[in-house]
Structure formats: C-alpha cells, structure tokens
Length: 93
Length: 294
Image (cartoon, rainbow over all chains, first blue to last red; front, side, top):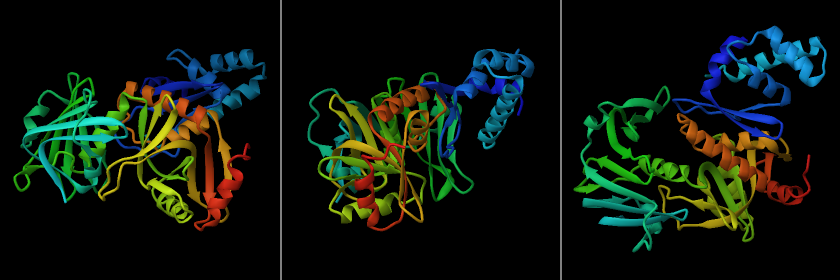
C-alpha cells in the first residue's frame, strides 16, 4: 500500500467526523461483512485528509511534524502504521 | 391462514404501506398481524403489484449492487435514470428470476412484478419484503438491523453480532427471565420525538407487532466468562453500523446511515459483551450495565 494508491481510493469512501476521529465507510457493489467500519484516530485522520494526488511521503512527514510537534522519526512511523492499517482494512476490497 | 385481497394495508414499525393490484394479492402468514383495514393519511409506501416478470425493464440500466456468495445469488440492483430496479433470484435456481421491482426516486413508490401462484400474487415473498422494509427506512430516521431485542417492561436491550454469535441464544435467556422478546433476528430502530424505539418486522412465522423504548445496544460474542465494556465515539458507531442492513453503493445512503448511527450512539449506550450462554448473563448485565464506564 502506498500513498498514490490511497489517493486513488479516497473517492470510494464516505467519511464522517466524530470528535477527533474519522469514520470511513467504503462504497461497495456487494454485500461485505465487516466487524467494524474504518475508524481513524487523530493522526491517521490527518494523514488521510492530507493525501492528494500530489502528496509525497516527505511532504506528508513534514506536515505531521509541524502539526503535531513531533520528531521526523515518529512522523515516519505514523505514516508507515497508517499505510499498514489501510492495507489491512482494504485487504478484502 | 393467508390473507388475500386486491388492496391491502400494513403498518410496520409505524410506517404505513398500501398494496394494490388488479389481481388477488396474497400475504404470507407473518404479515397478517401487521395488516390494518384503513390507513388514515397518505401511505408512506405504495406498492403496485403486477403479474409477470419483465426483464425488458432492465434495458438501459446498469448494475450497481449484487447480493451473492459462492453458493447463492440473492438479488441484484440496477440503476435506470433515477429509478432502482431490483432483480430477485430463485434460491433453488440462481439463474431463474423470482421477482422484479422498480423503486422510484422518492423511495415511496414500488412496482413489484411476480408470477402468479395459484392465481394469486405474492409481492412480499422473501426476500422482497425485507428489501422493501430496508428501503422504507433509508429516507427516514430509522434503520433495519440484524439483532435480537428483549423488553423488560421498562426498557429494551438490543443484541447484535455476526451470525452464530448468540442473538437467539441470549434472547431466549432473557425470555426465560421474564422478558418480552421483540424479535430474535431482525428489528427496525426508529427515532421519534420521545426517543428511540425498537420494532419487530414480519417474519416467516406469525407474531404480533411489537414496539419498545430502546435503552441499550450490545455487541455480543460467546466467551468463556461474562465480560462487558462500554464503547463510545467512532468505535461504537462503526461497530453498531456494521451490523445494520446496508446496500452501500450510494454515497447518500451511507451519509444518511452515518448520521443516524452517530445520533443513535450518542443517545443510547453501546456495550461489547462476551457472554457464557447460560442464565448468569442476565444478572451480569443488570449488575454491570449502569456502572460500566471503561
């Protein structure tokens, strides 16, 4: 899973803000059984909302560092964790 | 006993439904307690029932949704301009169309096409009936869920989860403890000025219409010991919504459901419950549901 792929998939989701979190519901053309929908915490939500077709890992990392006042290593880990989470969530799509 | 007429009225979860046909309409037994002689105002849903399957109505439509698995093909949904066309397949022969239906953009008017059976039309033959009920809720403050619901005379508790997680088992335990079971498989939750209410819907067996004020939602699973955890925020909403009946091919449907469940979970507590399938779970819930805040 990479940022470009997520950028392409964003239009296939409907989102709703709940507090600092975001719920994502995938558009689907079949009956998918899900134990829960996609919920993103504050950092994951920030990453999701800031991914566009022009986003690179490095400028996303810089935006996270600036917004959450964390170091680059932590921001990098956050992006990696987000991508892993999305890969897992989208595995059955 | 089955009811036959060429005009029939139903009230399901407070929604008024009028069926019309030039031919005789037959309803399965489970619908009979929901029939009424008259509907005072304009019906919420009007169903016109016709004889014969009309594959031609699919011309110029496109497939938007298909409910099927490796073994079975249940139904497909096609869009034609603003109308939705439903094709229901025979469960014994997946290539044979059992019924077709057209729903207009208002979501209030259905045309249902069925073949005559012994000179009568069965417009709400499974799964057409539940599909109509689902779409009836989509433009209202209501939702249909796979859940069981027990009412203690004061409050109703809903139990939902995957098939096999114990919805029927837990409702039987609450029934043994003197509770009224609203239904053990499928319910409609509806918001009114007085709060949220759970309703039963017609099943394959006969049961009278029931309604109860909703006070708690439990996401259940079997467990070696009884355990409970209160959920809140996005997690509660997403987990409860996952067990609602959904045809998520349309962004507006999803937005409407997200709004409903967000408000529902803001007003009704949601718990994750692991339970041992014996009567201990009833007292466990009674002892813990109000105090559990983790």
